[in-house]
Each structure stands twice: as C-alpha cells, then as structure tokens.
Amino acid sequence: MIDQFVIPLLKILIVLNATLVGVTYMVLLERKVIAWAQSRLGPMRVGPYGVLQPVADAIKLMLKEDITPTKADRWVFTVAPIISMVPALIVYAVIPFGPVVRLFGRDVSLYITDINVGLLYIVSVASVGVYGIILAGYASNSKFPLLSSLRASAQLISYEVAVTLTLVSVILMSGSLSMVSIVDSQYNARVWFAFVQPVAFVIFFIGGLAETNRAPFDLPEAEQELTGGFHTEYSGMRFALFFLAEYANMIVVSSVATTLFFGGWLRPFPNVAALHFLDVLPSWTWFLLKSFVFLYIFIWVRATLPRYRYDQLMRLGWKVLIPLAIANLVVTGIVKVMLF
Amino acid sequence: MAEAITFYTIAACILGFAALVVTTKDTVHSVLFLVLDFLFVAALYVMLGAQFLAAIQILVYAGGIVVLYLFVVMLVNLKRAPEAHQDPHRLSKLGFGLACAVLIELGVIIVSGYMKAPPAALAAPAVLPVSGNTEQVGWLLYTSYLIPFEIASMLLLVAMIGAIVLAKREL
Image (cartoon, rainbow over all chains, first blue to last red; front, side, top):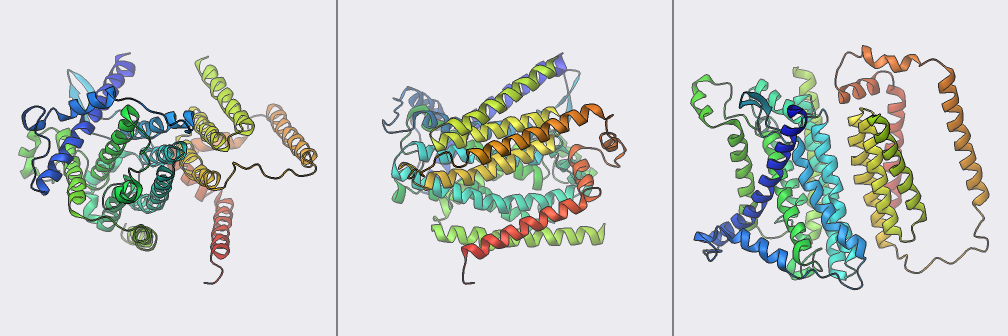
C-alpha cells in the first residue's frame, strides 16, 4: 500500500513543486545574471537582493486581468497554454535524480518511475508540446502570433530531427532506452558519454537551445520583428503558463543532458576509490549541480550571443547539424561493431 | 474487472473522438480531436503492455504527422467554402462499399479468432532470447519480420525521394 501509492504520490508532489519553484527562481537567476553581464544590479527591491521577486511576479501575474480577444478561437485559446505546460511537467516522471537509496528504513528510488522506453517517452512527450505553440498562434487570430508560431514550430520540428539522431547514438552506446540503465552503463563504461560522444553532445546542446526557443535561436520571440511572439495576445496567468513552460523545458533539456552525457547522479570519477570523500555530497546533489551548470550556460549564451537570422537558423539545422548527426551515428555504429 | 472498465472507457473515448473528427465543422478542432484520438490509442497500447508501441504512436502520429496536418489546415484558406460539386453524394456509394468491406473483414477475423485455438505466434515471445519490451520488438523486427521491415523501409525511401523530386524540379 505505502510502496504502491503513498511514496509515488509523495515523489510526484515533491518533484512538481520543486520544478515550479525552480522555474520561478530560474527567471530571477536569468534577470540577475544578464544584469551582471550588462553591469547592472537587476531586481533589488523585493526582499534582500531581490530574492522575493518571483513571489511578487507570481502575485502580479495571478491578479492581472485575463483577456481573451473577441475574434479569438475561444476553446483553442484556452487549451493552448495548458498543452504547452503539461508535457513540460510530465517529462519529469522518468528523469532519475538519483539511484535507489535507504530513507527511514525503506528502499526509495530517487526517480518517479523507470520505464523500459524512458528516453523515447521523453522525446514523444516533448513532440506533443509543439501543439501549444502552434495553437496559441492560430487561436489568437492576429498576424504576429501566427507568424511567430509558424516560425517556432518549423524551428522545433527541424531541430528535433538532429536531437533525436544524437539520442540514437547514445542509445547505441548504452544499449538501453531506460534512463536509469543509461546512467548505469556510464558507470560500467567508466566514462561519461560526453567524452565518448562529444559531437553528439554539442549537437544535442545546440538543438536544445533551439528547441526551447532560447537565444541565439529565439526567433519566435524576436521583439523587433514580431512584437511579443506567439503569446502576444495572452495576459495574466495564461501568459505565465507559456513562460513557465519555456523555463521548465530548459530544466528538462539540462536534466536530460546531465543524464545522457554527464553521468546523471554519479560523482566525478565514480570508479576511482581515492575520490571516495566526494561521496559526502549525496547523489542527487551531483545531479542538481550538473544540471545547474547547464542552466547557467543557457543564460550565459543568451547574454553573450546575438540572434541568428531565420535562413541561417534553418541552414544550420538542416545542412550542418542533421548531416553531422547522421555521420556521427554511422561512425558510432561502425566503431561499436568493430571494437565490441 | 478494473481492466475491463479501463478498456471500455478508452475504447469509448477512441470511438467518440473519432466521430468528432469527422463531424466537427472547424478543421483545426477536427485535427485536435485526431490528436486526442491518437493519444487514447497509445493509452490502449500501454494497457496491453506494449509501451514501445505506445511511445512510437505518440512520437510519430500525435507528435509528427498530425503537426504537418495542422500546418496544412492552418495555411490553406478554408474560410471560403470550396465550390460545391454538382453531385455532393458522388462518393457515398464507394464509401459505403469500402465500409462494408472493412466490416466484413473485421467480422471474419473475430469469428476465425474464436474458432481456432490460440495460434502459436502468441506463445512465441516467451522464448525470445531478450527481455524488455523494446528489445523484443527489435528482435522480432530483425528476425521473423525482416523482409516486411525492409520492404517498408524501401517504401519510405521511395516516398522521400519522390517528395524531393516533386519539390525540387531542377537539381
């Protein structure tokens, strides 16, 4: 009874709440880091050094008037933010934050579930998230959101191909689709897959930037050309849902990158006995630390790089990343057959 | 008991959304119901223990193909009704015939399924040398069903080349 219902529900509750809190604080972190990069202070008014800014933002967004344009497709307009938020959250079901540990005299796994098709589940759920963006642009019945949603979905579909191909080469290395076994196989191989598959990792990360609509690929939100992007007509909490989904997706990409390429919850050099003192930090903190590095890079890239032009973006996706990913896959396959 | 309830709920949702797909006036809504329909089909696969098939169903159908449908529906101007053909029921006879054929086919399959003892193919997965849903699908695809698999791949390749030829006349 407890193992079947209470513990999974508790885990879901903790992961969901941690994600939402993490997402709101990601927004603050982003504002702070970009402010520092531009020699500003960033939010300073609410709480010491602005740490309560997310709370103020949340209250503001919830109290704001929620407007539906008269010419909008009312049903689709309501459903679109939900469609983009839900996939971003249910992906966390298969992300392993740590191995099975003993807590209060009970074996508890630090992941909600470990299914045989874990990685495929993530890819397929993420592919459903596109609908939120397309439908938001369509339902607003306004030209800028429509243009931006078309850009966003074309970009997402193009980069999804390259990203999925890199995932296939990781699967070749690990021989499994389950997220937990992928981490285990990195332990057994005595190396993080980022060092065996550097090309795959770079393509994955660039694709991740593009799939989350982040700078330098944030064309769907190019303010100078499109006013506000696909959520121009949204206000209040519905706008907030799109915003949260974008940041939740960033956390997803970081966690997946950590799991697939940087050994998930494993500490650095997990097979070297001399480094046992590193085990003072529990496994999940290693996972969070690694993911945090990726999130920081996301922000850093945004503060540093200028935006791509749309044709450059498409050329990079189709003519550079996808052929490179296919070549990487073929080479991985050949080497795997020859050596093992 | 619980299994039966789940199955009939999912089946009812599949049929209900399928009916909505063909009856809804707004084409975008229709495509959305199609996505929901595919998601419930995936739920049916999960119920049957075929998680791999369920994930592929969502990835390929709900997440891939229908997105392209949505693009077409959104970009083609459907606000102006297409000019009516002289005979709006010109295809009803053909449709009726096809529906009858499918119905008879399904009936034959169900009846013959009851007549025969469970075929040996059902017992076959038990002797597969691999465990795990994905591994078993892969094993079967590359051993027992290798030729159909290769033919399907060939078909997709031909379709891809055809699309490229159509889109780019001078290469």
